Image (cartoon, rainbow, N blue to C red; front, side, top):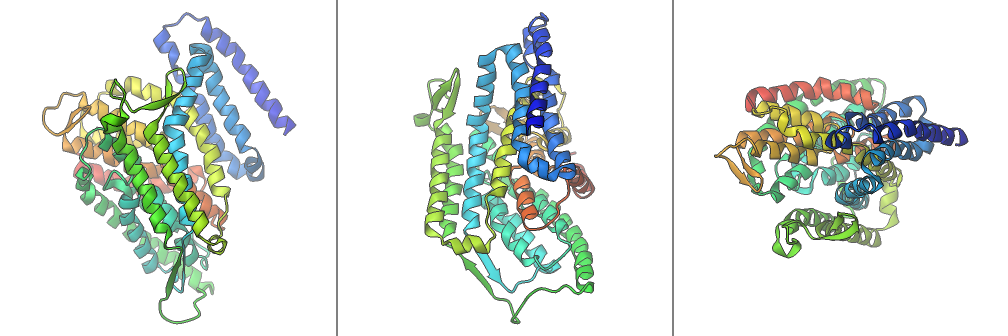
Length: 479
């Protein structure tokens, strides 16, 4: 620990000459406000997440909080030197109050409620059963959210395949389909679409994405079936078999009343998108009412209401469900703790990249749907897909189209909006940090003895399986 703190101190001291030079360089203020090199801490944190679990897993588990603190300070201190301490505090508070808070509260609530629902029975994890569960979870994602469907389906799928040795591919395709692609049909499904709904996109407009989702789901499930069948046969050949005591199919669900609390959480998410559009929750500038925190940063009242409802649902879930249900689910707090620590660093350090994107998005020369699809998707793989979606939606609305979907930002052609929506939702599957539930599913899988691919290993999986599917999307739907 002392050695690590010494490294942290040395790294911070190394920033002093840079900050001193930056504050006296006399460069243009607008350019100095967000130089590209301030994206280095974000890249450094991602590199730590990718490398240390492989080379120093025990050390990383003990010290990841310090690593998050280090990289956050390596962004905030130079940013403070360039723009002032007040601006640095405002930037950190703004991303915590407006982005991270709703993100982690939603994830926490769903983690708690889903952990109080257990599925038991003699349904074994065969290729056909796994395909059926993945298909059901994919269709469910648009109606309870990708995070809700992921937390609801992950433990049953893990239980049914607990007898198998080769399981990592199951959870990888789980992330592809349930945690991402399935969430494209309604604003409930994924936060970018909720952002579009709050900007005037009709609630059921995204049902137009059904053909794209069906194509992607069909292709991926067909590929998954072949991969799973091969691994299933190898497990059987080694003498492994499911522990099924009685013939037939018997399934018992305990804690089913928690679906009521899941509905509370879904209602809270919908409210967070609807309330800012109501005059009663708007200030004189037409913005959502907020509680002042520091400078110009406010905690939006709709976010506070959403968080209160979700936390109430989580509390009621624990109060009304016996501890034996959580024991049957092998419920622990490890996964949510890991996600909470890592993502506060990710949310803070990715601010320079988001600011650069907001400042330069209109200058990228993107005027075709396929360009919007790839640009939105590529950046959504590593950045928060909600602001990325909003940047490119704003860019598309600024191109001067006169026909299409009318939003509060302007008019955007349907095919262009489809491309932006699919890019933001689908390509969140490309990395563990691309969408909220991805890393959570990985952590829960790791806890249950599945050796999931590393950060870079998962990139290879997504490039090999998702790359051709997205290329097919671009050729068929977004030319």
